[in-house]
Length: 256
Length: 315
Image (cartoon, rainbow over all chains, first blue to last red; front, side):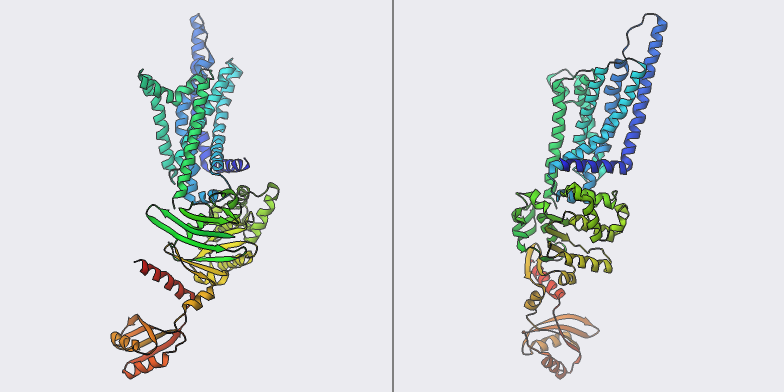
């Protein structure tokens, strides 16, 4: 456990030593902020119009701001940013030769992998925190439902963690961070597209694809529902990512 | 101590190391000598647990590196050819991290970092980013990392590579001081380094062990024949033929021909001084004798002989 924390701490420190952490946080803050602004603005205008028009329809902040923010926009933003977080995890170690330090120290492969995963997750949680600062603002001026927002939070973390574990796996293939980032991005994109394709077809195959899709499972969280099958799904992806990384690291040791 | 038994490492069709066996006794400094590509680094990577062996067993302090890797690695300090440093970390941060992952207790960490920095002469750059340090400093930080957990066994891959002469002397001094408290294996292709720091030598070439022994033992064993260098002016083939006929001469090797002057390496039986006979042979044949001297066998000669002979055998 101490080893896992040591590695995680090192990863976090390295993220913040380089421009990457600041770049990712800034891009995220700007995008998240912009969309939050746009959605809240729309909400305000709509509620104005409702008041003007007489009959007021109950409008929910959750439905009009929180849900679109998470389900529609943030998932896409993560598609772009997650590869930037994971690209250096193993690629840089391979390039600089420091992987030799890790693999010849009394650490198990799993400790190394989990340490890196938690380091990446740590940076990701900084992004999550930012998001929920924005959402928290809603409470100052409006009356959104807390429970669905908490469900969103959980879904957001699990969704990100799943992407990170897969991105980490991809990072083990190459010494080149750029290649790792691009391939991760392609992988995530394919997983996203699965959802779009599956929503078009209603055949059995379509339903299977839909089950496999990341965004489908995230959807219920955004609706405020915590479904155990969705939890299992995300945890399985995370475990899969870690397992694949472990196999890949073992293969690394076979080569000169 | 280190026990390597019938170690073989293959990558697909490539045989990097074949049936290598040797022991390093506790407290000993063993030199691992061989040309580039001989399998030195591969062997070291197996000893340190980085690569799994294809066949054979390696034990460090009694622990099998495949069966009990954590125990073995806890007792091993490793400096690879290229020091595994994180360029964006400061020296202090890096050594702290290394100490932590190698099992140094939290309360001892700061003290150990200080001690090992002093020992490796990197105490004055504690707060500098490693990426900004010179090669010499980086190498020493790498050595510090190998020592931080006070391991029983040290594996050093070309520890003086890239250092300036002063730093080389300092590093060698450091290694000599480590002997006794630590078991050391160091690999090098710099021959004087071996005679200066190592008690015993394993010579490896083409993935196989070619010789084992104390440096001066090897010298004596292989300096079986006295060697004489002869330079004469005249037709090279005829000179060669004539001196081959001198009594006691086993082998004449033509070394070079420059402007009509031919140089030969003449190998005779052990303790047979054929110089007078050679001189007479050359002069009587009306050729000009320009140089005649006994040539001892240095470690360089042994090295070349062992390693190039091996290569031609393979061919």
